[in-house]
Length: 389
Image 1: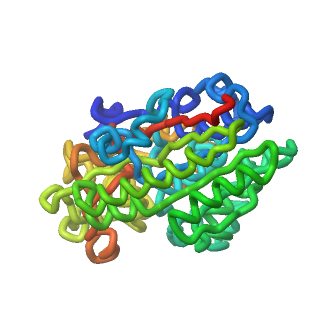
Image 2 (image 1 turned 45 degrees about the horizontal axis):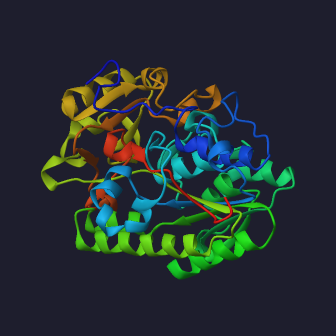
């Protein structure tokens, strides 16, 4: 499928109602001016929604798509009862590294440069897996934009990130959260306790929390599994504990980085079974529902034709310039464009583009995300306020 973005895929509404708009709005509500590269400071109206709050916690639940939450509202009564200013859009690709840096910087992927789960390092003939990233490339060079946390801290607002201890100091944590003090967690109860302790530590402040287990459970067992449903119940219990312990002048926002969907075995295209998809390809990046193909010199046109021919309407397939012009990444800095593939393929419907030989683990997963279907893009924004607000 070529041409304009098809109607079944969603172009994220950057600067209006996306994950990028959350932290700038919170910072604005707490009296901090944030540089967003020309985007409005608070398009979500959080200044009004958080009126009177002196301390705000933002909890991101990895994989908690808005459609999934509504479909399982009976399993998450606390989450489902929270006030909601409306759904947000995840960025493109709708995947964790892209979303976390989009949240942390307050700008779309095209402005911060973390443009996929796995991307090429231009000029070095190698790939960077952003969740296995340590310090090569240097996170401050790879993602040079100041985070909202840095800007808030510079303005004198205490800021804390509460997330798994294993992620402290990683390249991704540095790119997304730098400027915040890092408080490492060892489990769900610890997350709730440390969020509340961090809120109570100062009379004003911004606290960010992150929990990955729902997403991992979905990937391994599927979102239509007892395991996923029970894990959702545990997330709801964590939120219940935080809401119950909120200081009177504090507020809690709950959001997510993306949704996800189960992908049956019969709706997978394996590049290792389709030689035409690898002919002329130097590096295959991205992930099964959001692929980047980097072509050998002079082969980009042939690779684009081959991917369109093999995938047909199972994916939106575009050349790099066409994908950038579509707006799915937001405005793309010219210095970052080469991190996007010569060919971009975003899966439609329940399809995935796996690579069983080179990516055996990811190719065996039950559920995926990364593309721009409504199930992947729509994420919740939920609000709880302290008793004095």
